[in-house]
Image (tube, rainbow, N blue to C red):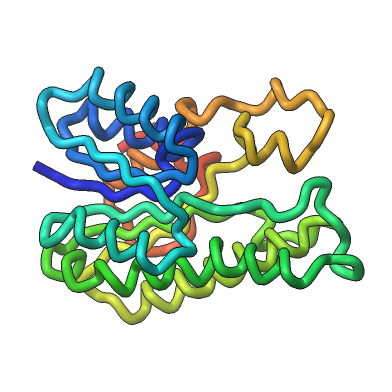
Length: 232
């Protein structure tokens, strides 16, 4: 039985991915900062499971103690780590000239430092099981959008971490996956007061990542928009 650890798995894309994996017989460990949302997510996942383990752990990925708990939860049984948890930063997003530096530290802690720290915790297991690492990124990490400097630069850093890990870790598939715009709470926060109902729901994007996981191409950057056009 395969096991996945998905950060930020209590809602949005993380939860949609967890639900897809559980329905296919995977065991999953998810986390989230909101206990009520996490409890609801675990109940939902157990409703589609066939008896395999589903566990939710409340906490913030920027907290070292929480990361230790996540690593203990999977132990020597981990095939897939998905670094999905991230923070947008202030909303509305300020230009870099006015960006509060304490907020920027927080964005970097959550979006860059925490994923690397968690990777370091579980890499021995992923190497041994020839597992897969997926870092969720964004086009804001490669394009220069006004107002997206804080979040975008954090995703650019995460992409380069992934790029280097792909060169260093021959026994692990390393993917940095861009799901594109989705109808999520974070995307709504990026566009306060705007109607984002034209964006796709997260569960419609999950098949693209599942295709990546099933076909296991070479480590690299992949976009959901491109994978959706490819059939295994």
